[in-house]
Image 1 (tube, helix red, strand yellow):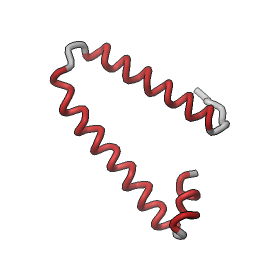
Image 2: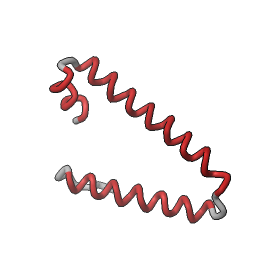
Image 3: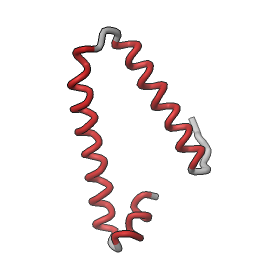
Length: 73
């Protein structure tokens, strides 16, 4: 998927994998930074996690639909 598309742009599977892995690790770091700043201000953690999981599931279903694939649970 992602690596094949990046290979078309970058021309090398090594560079494509490196870019994909760097983007993934950057996303983890930015997500941790974002949560660390806001977790202390959260009054109802269960409600916040429920909203987060709902948003995550909604995005996952939409992405699977856009890619033309089936969502297997």
